[in-house]
Length: 387
Image (cartoon, rainbow, N blue to C red; front, side, top):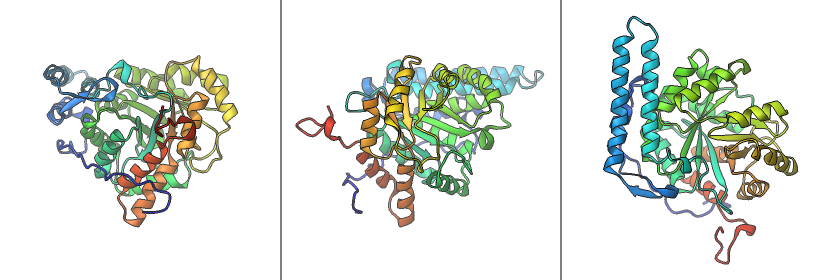
């Protein structure tokens, strides 16, 4: 074991059998099928506070029923849409969104009290970690997500990899390049999310997609319905042109897809107000300008002021990222009033180190998460645990 790594228990490989990939198609392209086939894989739903609860026959029936109704409605649309051109595509996406809602509800994500960072409490700030889908390889994602689900992590910010990001430093850009070299695409990522979503008890999945590389040329409504249909709990759309924001907000609202909005600590009032108004998953406050993994520590005084202003402008949770590397950083953001911290480059670097040295990337990332969740001095009780 390298110096500085915490000893952790062996990672449980609780891979749950799932259906075969849907031939590279986004789940919304075959509405109801993913939800129906995945329903049999889930043994239980999340109870209050994210604790496992026995599967309810009524809930399972409702889950399957929603998928069946979605598939049935799409079949009706298909029959009526031949002469209407375009109608069938919209109907398929709508059914996919209904199936996705059923996926989220069956895994506990549909409860109003169990949204993003709902488990936060004094000494236990919310935690989101960034990972490029496909780095580690996509077939490792079920194990990685299961570990995060078991390790007190609230949110996996899962990026559809894209090249040459202007907002990312070399660590995340190398990660995206590795994933792209492995052939990772949006349909593959959505298939992977659909397969693992019903196995999760409390972990939320926020999909990050880049407009230019991933979404451009696709109808925003179809895209939002596909993301919702896969069971994603939220969407962060990177690099969206300002002229398309209104259409994006409307498309997400119609699909029932919560949004992650962003602003900088130095953004102008209009930008901050728009982000606050449209945040429905969480508001991601970027601590300062610069590329991820290359920036200095956040200006805490400025962050505290901005967080105070945002608190009065939105009901969505407030998450802060960029420059967050350690458990002490996470605790400091909580003290400033953030609901959660977003950790990116520091964790991606650990995955890279594991891949380069032949270690298990899931176990390496588990060590990193344990370090982030290690109690800091002002959050210890006499027994050394969070209060």
